[in-house]
Image (cartoon, rainbow, N blue to C red; front, side, top):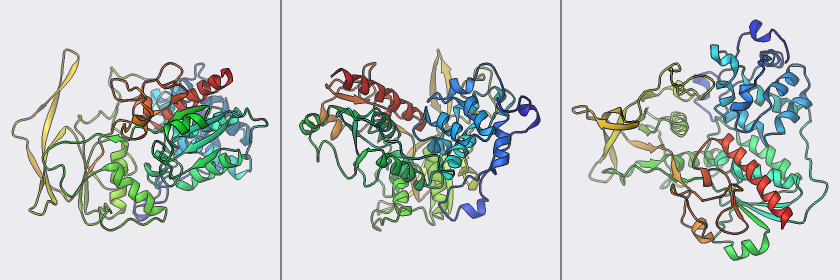
Length: 474
């Protein structure tokens, strides 16, 4: 514990965002940083609470009180090593994690939790600036070869730990750059891609091999894969977007959110997209369907592309501003979340269902029909019903479907590998993360379903441990 009375004498202070009228004109990270003195004061607010619920709430088991204390005392190396001991890239979770640790912080009872996520990011950045973060390749090699398919957070987390264990790790990525969801799913205004590249350079120096533009299952067959590698880890995510099969779905102007976001990330990276393929919000009335993080990212990107207006709708009711009785601390609060993108200019509406998309004679989207819905709990099941007489027509030029993901894509790699699926369409694994095919393991969204980056990192850790044990037995 840093300062025994810090939580009583130092108020919570957030770094906040860059001014709205500045940030909407670029794709630079919107979040600001506190100076080092203020950051130490924020770390001093971590109290000796006896039971660190923050540690319990963190999916990767971050030893939060310990590194907060080191941060407060100016021990930058100690703070970083403790933080890095449970997380392969805390500089990323320090930027994009929704911070379940803060929601379960004891001080959150009074809505004054420690700024854990911001402190995490600052700890890593201070360590990089001080030259503390350097390559640390394994001293010995086992000679065992592991193929990790997919370079998102689960794949990179597993690859890092398997490499540290001395195995020879090759990461395959179907896209032109490493990072998966981190690279092409999260906008640059939330995660500058230089942050990913900095960590990847460390991984390269530590001996991990990366192969991009390789479609495993097509460019590399199952037979060749199993012949060359002693173990294979599937970490391809859950990329099958939830569709909205209503009238007019095929109109020009209705797109999946991830297609929109990926294009913009590629453009920011200096790539060009043909005019025929380009999905642009400029001078358009945009409707984002889906109220989660992906929807929020579409809002911020549309605003930066100079949309005429942006509306975001959600089929569920508007969440409460504060916790309700059946949602107590320290559990995740099911309350209203407002992102930096929402604050840039967006109309948000709830309890709305989409009835149909309406186009002109050329097949171009012009309007959307929506209807209000109400939810009733009937014997423990929530039932949705439309409210008669509440139909509404919206003038819309671009619709972005951001309703989440249903399962991993089966066509191609997974079907080629002949792995079994569970009832939800995810890759079926046992307690050791092994699939139905010998030597093939799976980790993250591909076997759990779409979730948070921090959950994927932990899944990669668990899988790496099981793959390592498998290799040492065989």
